[in-house]
Image (cartoon, rainbow, N blue to C red):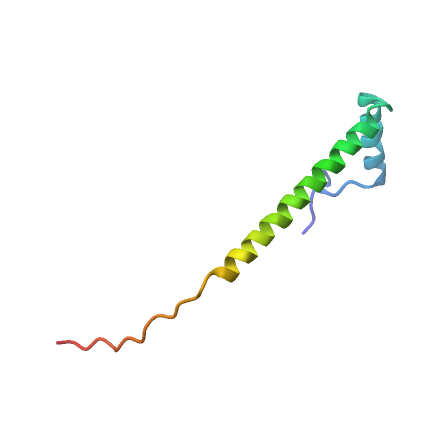
Length: 77
């Protein structure tokens, strides 16, 4: 299946162009602040995801699977 050019993944020239636009918009002094904020956001997201995984595993481990009692086949009266 061939995707149109608009839906293809960006290559190195496109990524460099985007980084250049970001540099022009925010300036060189703000880039370290933006990168630090982005890193902290990613770290917080990772911690939240790991905590959610731990809670799901803890809840799954605490649940007991109960078997249904053996039932006799229904006999018409």
